Image (cartoon, rainbow, N blue to C red):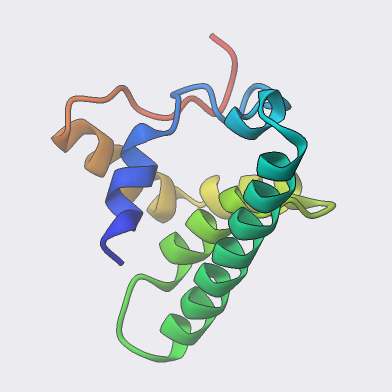
Length: 111
């Protein structure tokens, strides 16, 4: 829950317009790449499960699922993320959070 605003604010404004294939781990030692990949996917899976639980319990379920999906490396991730973030309510909340911390809103279409 505490990392949710930090990560959503730090996303580049064009995150949903570009294909990010370069990550911090891709230029490191092979052991660090594998360890980073596993850790990132493990944390992403836990966050998605927590988001699913928050759909029934009090909390920001959909935003937490969006955060978890950004961490995961799964087929169809981009399509799932776009389907969630394009919902007007979700996009409004994310952009309001970004505005509070002086970040530009997420761009969903090329300018």
